[in-house]
Length: 149
Figure (cartoon, rainbow, N blue to C red):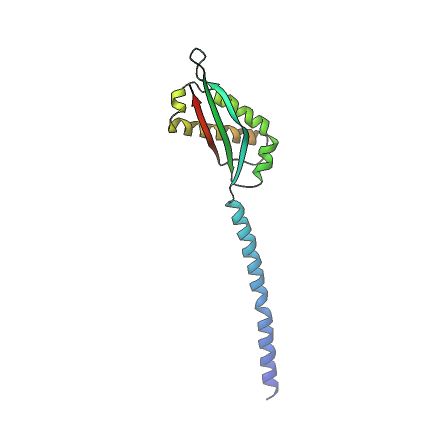
C-alpha cells in the first residue's frame, strides 16, 4: 500500500513539472507576436526641413509663391534611414512637383492640396522603389501650406 501513494505522488510531480514548460513557451511566442504587431502599428514622422519655398503658377502672371512644410509618415522605424539616405533626391522630386503647379486657385482648395499630397507620396515611393530600399511611406503631411499671390 505504501508503494501506490509514492507512484501517484511521483506521477503528480511529473505532471506538474511538465505544465510550466508549455506555458513559458507560449508566453515567449506571444511576446514575439506582440513585438511584431507593435512594429506594424508604429508611425514614424520624418520632417523634411527646411520648408519648401517655390514659385508656382504661370510665368506671365503676377509671381505667386508656395511655402510648404512637409512631414513624411512611415509605418516602420526602418523607413527613416532610407529616407535620410535619399533626402536630396526626395527634396528634388518635391521641388519639381511644386514648381509644376500652374493652377494656383486649385492649390488653395482642400481637394487640390489632397491631390498634391497624393502625388508627392507617389513620387517619393517611386524613388524609394527605384533605389531598391524595400521601404515606402504611408503618407505626406503638409504641416504648413501657404500660397502667396
